[in-house]
Structures are given as structure tokens and as C-alpha cells.
Length: 224
Image 1 (tube, rainbow, N blue to C red):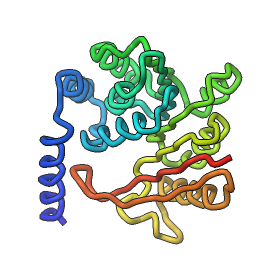
Image 2: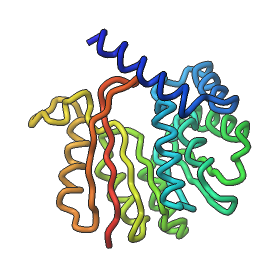
Image 3: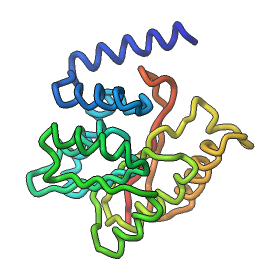
């Protein structure tokens, strides 16, 4: 497995160096997050570039992110927005949120990005009450136990055509375990069951390997 991981990381580095090279703001965001003791679980650079391309290709103007961490993925997506775009990102930890705000401001994106602090399941009803949506694009990368709730809220705050991306859905292959003993896997399986039953969502999921190991993502589109 270690040899496989070395190869996956080498290939990711090749792709990144050519197609998604780091710049000052992105590198500083990772460095500041590391210095603050945040877990090193941000998306890989090529995954960040994928989010950027998805937002741009979709022509999204309003983006919702559930799970900010240090704002690395936030920066990638916010850079894809037009001048009148807006990105709202939800972060449970006040420490993480403060780091993210600093990173986002350093990247010059604080005018179009709002970092809200608190449990997402408390903040999402407030966004609904304030008519903050509908959002054109939703990225979910938070605690996996609540994945089904996050997808349900994403659907409430969406419109026909909204794209929803959920990260870390393969769980090292454990997602195929019928009776997992990991709450993160259980929550993610419940999310898949919900999406499979939901007629308003058309979705697929793909497995990935890379510098972040073996995992994958779900891509869904709101149809009605």
C-alpha cells in the first residue's frame, strides 16, 4: 500500500505542477492552517482546481460550502465567481473560522466570501429564513455523520440545475461495508440511500486515488 501511495502522490504532483501550480495565497493558506494546528485534510491542489472548474463551467454566482477548515477550498471556488458572486461557507470551529477569514482576506476575496461560525445544522435554517439561496453550487466537506442532513438542506436551498458535490464518500473502501462500525461510513451510506430515493437528484460517485489516499466524491444535480 505504501508503494501505491507513493505512486499516487507522484502522479498528483505531476498533474499539479503542470495544471494547478500553487501561488502565494494558496501556499500561505496551507502554511497558516498548519501553523495554527489545523488538521491537514484540505483538498489537494488538483481537487481544488476541479472545484474551481466546476463552479466556472456551471456559471455559478452563489456558492454554499459546508465545512471551511482553513479556507483553502473556499479560495479555489471563490476565485471562480464573477465580481457580483457570493460564497457562504459554514465552519463549526471558531479557531478554524478565524484562520479561514485571515486566509481569505489575504487572497483578496473577503468582499465576496462570508464565513459563518457554528454548527451547520443551526446555521442552515437561518440561511433559509434569510432567503440566502437559492445556491447554484454546494460543496459539502464536513463531519460525515451528518452527510444526509447536509444533502437534505442543500436540496432545500437549491434550484433546478444546482450542482452538489460531496467529498470523502469512499472512506477507503468502507462505504461498501453493509454493517459498518464507523459512524462516518454509516452517515455516508445513509446519504447515498437518501439520494438514490430522491427523484429531484440525479447523481453519480467516483473513486479517486492521489496524495490524499484512496477516496472519492459524489456529484449530483438538482433536476426539479
